[in-house]
Image 1 (cartoon, rainbow, N blue to C red):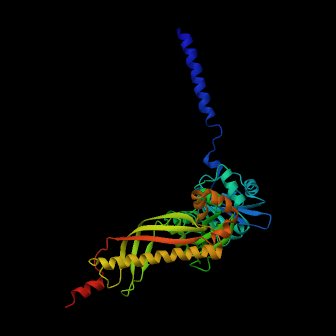
Image 2 (cartoon, rainbow, N blue to C red; image 1 turned 180 degrees about the horizontal axis):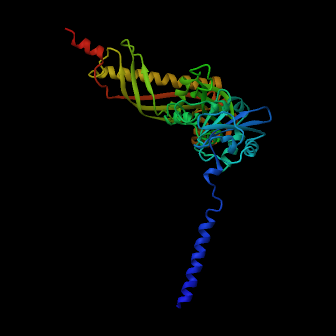
Image 3 (cartoon, rainbow, N blue to C red; image 1 turned 120 degrees about the vertical axis):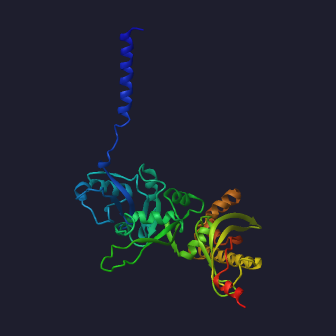
Amino acid sequence: MSEGLRLRRYSKLSAILLCILLAGCWDRKEINDLALVTGVAIDRKDDKQIELSLQIFIPKGSSDPSQSLGEANSGSGGTLVQSAYGENVAEALSQLQKKMSRQIFWGHSEVILFGKERVEQNIRDDIDFLLRASQPRERSYVYVTKGRGKKILELHSMIERNTSEVLREMSNTRTSYTTTLAQLSKMLNDEGQAAVVPWVEQLPPVNPAKPDRAVGYINGTALLRQGKLSGVADDKMTRGILWIKNEMNNAVITIHPKESEGTVSAQLLHSKTKLSPSIVDGKWKMKISVSCKNDLLQNTTKLNVLQDEKTIKEIETDIIENINSRIMLTIHKAQKVYKTDIFDFGNEFHQHYPREWAKHKKDWYELFQTVEVTIETKVDLSRPGMFNSQSMKTASAP
């Protein structure tokens, strides 16, 4: 091969590689051209329109963010909140983009808030858009707020950089129920068509003169049926929901033993819940089996939990009663008060009895209220630890 031919081939190859590299970044967006969204709120404006609010990160060094992002509302330190109206989320987003010189980018948003009045209408269409659009993250945490979601975004956090981070960190601790966008969509499309979403309220401000110096916190669970709000569960019922849905990850169980004054607290180490549906003589039944392992955390009674195996068994029995009472309270409210299958019993019956389910699917809401529920709970209390001070004094007395 001649030297000239070899050089021409190398030149062609270099040109092809250069074209590939250039083609790979033709649509790249510089960070300075983007408005980075940290939180989203969707509220009801009226019967025909919604209000979309975005919490947008302010880059350091921006002396006047309104010049680059457009006219803005107040927000948390390091963020601002902008809003627009529309007949749906897509239209509101389009109107919001017109107000801003930077392109809106949802890729960093980790929280989505729905105001109570919006959920009372229906949020199925909103969820559909958020899943169809390319930028919103399916792993974003979803919440329902007592008031307007926009107001939560506008609060100033004293610890985290913004209120979106506050809610995200609360969800990461797993002390309450957590729901992602993908999980919410799945629950609303399962056989029960019901969902549970963390309920957010605003703490009173420390200084009444600065009402925006407060924070939103999770205080219960919103119950949804076919995309609409059917009720709000308090903290006690929320614990029952966590047990039934096998989502109990972090809890301290405190009991008052019958044998002695004082309390015993146990730290949950591990738990597992299994649902077993059955249909016997036309009666639909659900067995809830719970097993958990706990570590003794504190004992303020005179009970000797170090050497007395009988006492340990009695404490385990008291813990079982505590768990069962929470679960039964939750079942009663779901069946008789809210009449909503928030536990996805329908999907369990569908999987185990597809023919019977096909016959009764249309009547499931009425049938759910009559399902007979039984509970089987097993508790293992490990590491009883040292004597408490009262038992030590009793043992050393002459």
